[in-house]
Amino acid sequence: MSTSIYSPASDRYPNTVGYQNCGKSGLLLPRISLGLWHNFGDVDDADEALKMIHYAFDHGITHFDLANNYGTPYGSAEKNFGKIMKSDLSAYRDELIISTKAGHDMWPGPYGDGSSRKYLIASLHQSLKRMNLDYVDIFYSHRYDPNTPLEETMGALSDMVKQGKALYVGISKYPLSKAREAYRLLRENGTPCLINQDKYNIFTRQIEQNVLPLAEENGVGFIAFSPLAQGLLSDKYINGIPENSRAAHSYGFLQKSQITPEVIAKISELNEIANRRGQTLAQMALAWCLRTPEVNSVIVGASSVKQLQDNIDAIQNTAFSNDELWRIGELG
Ligand SMILES: NC(=O)c1ccc[n+]([C@@H]2O[C@H](COP(=O)([O-])OP(=O)(O)OC[C@H]3O[C@@H](n4cnc5c(N)ncnc54)[C@H](OP(=O)(O)O)[C@@H]3O)[C@@H](O)[C@H]2O)c1
Image 1 (cartoon, rainbow, N blue to C red):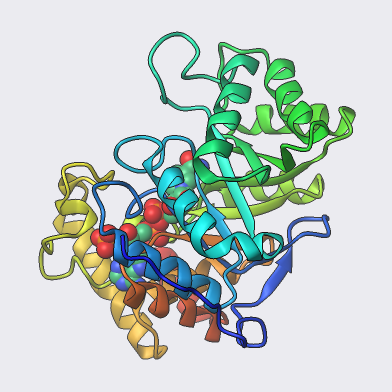
Image 2 (image 1 turned 180 degrees about the horizontal axis):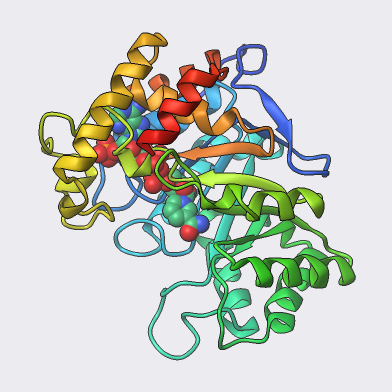
């Protein structure tokens, strides 16, 4: 990674992506956040990763989303982000919302997976070290674990807040009934749930039925992950699988088998709708998520500054005609 003397753009806030309160809380989230699941690990281009973090912050993206096991190998996204934090961003710590998570497979043995108090608290300590941080802004329970009582998982989250190691806590991918219970437990512990993080995009919209209304009822914010369906909702796969795309990598989570002729036909039609709106398909896909007032922010992944730039411009037009919504709904 090249060394840099970084000085953020002085117009990063007037020039912004826009901010919205996260649920009923006072915390403002940028409408577009940057996720470090792919593209920031040791197998990725470190110079491009650094440029993306700079570009994001220069354009008002204040929220960076991580997890203990992001990057190949696990932990490398946090470690690489931690280096940038130390060299370039430490002076701007109070302008940043940094989240991490634990819940999935991380280290060997009985305490490196699941949602026990032992795993979550040990993992938070590791994440803080890797990222060169004293605290994270948001700590998530990355998934519901049927083998751990919810009281134990929520108790661990609440203690992180009480100890000042996390400012807020959230949940991710929880079944509805468990989300309801989690909101109650966290409220009773005096550390209300800030945010729910779940998948939302044109192809995956189940959360509209009950996850979003339940979050709103409880004053909990919502942030969408994989808003581009891991890149499917862009024009990149219309004419084949480009080298270096997520689907082409052996370590990426998007499988070639997901790119079927039916999917390509849908993407091609969606691309035409986007072009008629004067947007790229990626921009329209993000704008479509952001049209929903309960979606406070979308977490985009990007493998280049060019993609990030494209994505940020989505904010220019988040209004849709009924005809557009109907046709997108048909294709989703
Ligand atoms: N809570 C959870 O369990 C969970 C699960 C998944 C993700 N997340 C969070 O959500 C974040 C985003 O997830 P995601 O990476 O799946 O998001 P995504 O935004 O749906 O997909 C990102 C991928 O789309 C492609 N892309 C992005 N912008 C593009 C553009 N303008 N034009 C063409 N292609 C573009 C890139 O693929 P190429 O690499 O092919 O260029 C990029 O890597 C993650 O980093 C993570 O923070 C959370």
